[in-house]
Amino acid sequence: MKKVYKGIAVAVIFLILIGIKYPVATMMSLKKVGDYPVLRLDFYGTNPLLPKNSNELKRMIKLFYPDATKRKNDIYCSLIAAKSKTGTIYGRNFDWYKAVPVVVVSHGIKGKRYASISLTDGVYLSVKGDCGLMDRLNAAGAYISPFDGMNEKGLFISIALVKSEKVPVDPQKETISSVLMVRKILDNASTVEEALTIVNSYNIDFFPGPHVHFLIGDSNGEGAIVEFTSKGVKVIRKKDPVFATNFTFYDKDKNTDLDSLCWRYAKIDSFFKEKEKVGFGDMLLLLKSVAQIGEKAFKTKWGDILTTQWSAVYSPDGFLRVCFGGNYNKIYTFKIEK
Image (cartoon, rainbow, N blue to C red):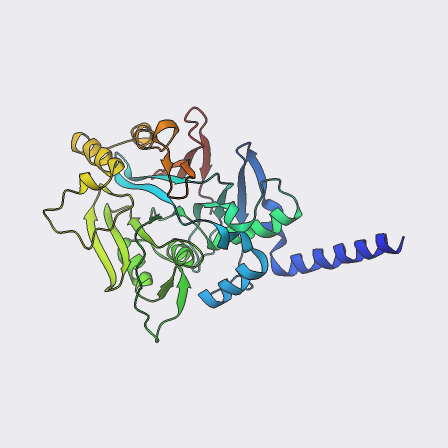
């Protein structure tokens, strides 16, 4: 009987601590919306206990998310921004190990944060997909770890693995993680220019994930690929369409045959030589054509198989339409909610 009372006491204390650590509304919003499994989290208000820099993040990961440090750095992706009839449309394939996708609907705060919608792999956060107590606790970290997303202003950002380099550190700037930088951009930038100002305001730390570059696009059709190199931050400006896979651009001269570097890049390039404007259906078909599914799956140097975990299309009307696990017959729909 004493053990039972002790267990209840521990549970009550744990629940109290959870209530302090995470806003109850956010924690209770987590729900399973698909059997992949696919989860949805609504992020409300603010959370002062979420890490604000890389040192705080490292402490949190050691305490709560040890699985994040065990993931191999083999994220292979396709990132696209293009013209549509009503604005700029974005496409993204996330190609990796089996994921537990978490769709984060971040509700805006007037004057402080734009509303946005984003995707995160919950495996990094030790999310299992059962929406149990630990999932509710862990999934709240998805807010500060978006892999791709778009805000209410039509600003999109996504990440993809590239070669690792030692990036210079400015002692006058705060250091934050790559995904936290993505979050700051989604929350605060309405244009590519504003996003680049945020990028240049911080040092970047890629712990615990891989070295990545960013593709950023806005509703004005402006685009940029941002790379973090041994020579500092390099920005490759482009008008839509702008697209990237898993090689760097800053170190290529104008005579480099980029199509020869990646079959996915070549296929996307060929597609846009034929089409100037695309709709949702066009973008989804393009993502399907470069998906790493079946015989196109990528085999890593460790012998593991990477496949396309999600194909996401972010539309100018604020909708995210996304397929998981290569099932293009099942489309999940979400919307930015202010």
